[in-house]
Length: 326
Image (cartoon, rainbow, N blue to C red):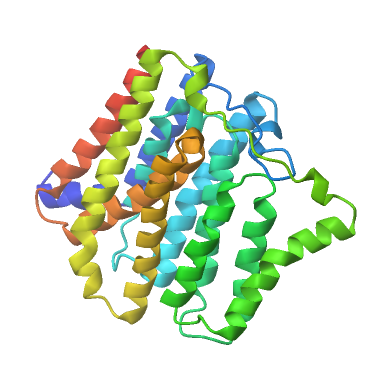
């Protein structure tokens, strides 16, 4: 098989399916081996966190794998719908799933991190539909409604409210009407929940600042820290490697990619600032990193670029193997 055919195969749907199936199988093996550490603590502002919605069980594993697969498919749909990478590559889906599998506790249970990634990426898709349409107040309302509602289960959503305000500016729709729609979207969940007596203002609680590292051994902390560090480095390197090409895209391409950069930067900052909640940000970091990496290899699809792709896959396969040997 020639180098060109290998590159073409790695960007194909068949390769994405194979990588994704392998990642899912690896996650199931980790779960069966007891390597999935339950994420505890309540990080909501009034309701129980998503990690407490289901007890540690197979249903939690299956639900999380379904959502992770959905995120991978959503990124493919967004790329196709909005031409984000100016390519038809679906490498992002396999990369995201294998990055998830490298941290069994992130991939092997349903918790707030997976839900945060779903909401933020869904919000991004809704936001992209408003490009250069200042009259599109309903999508803006919906985005901020979801963020506000979900903040009752995980305070991290509050951190992304300013991110989406920046996104509105990037979509060229930030005006009095969109700001009003956003404010109403933030207020409405509180109004509805209080109106139906589901919450009282006295019920709003301070989140428990516990982190997953308190439940693991030193060797596991090292593996998780190294995996997070590798993903951060890859995100920065591939994101920087795409900047010049992104700058040459048309106005909507620059805006769409610009928002993904803002989400990536915000996620990286939050990982350092809100380190006790790092597990919540990992799926979103993996999603952003998978996007930038896939974008990088799509615009640098040279004859020997398959070496870089296989190296990334091998690194995460090695990190996963390290996790099961601890």
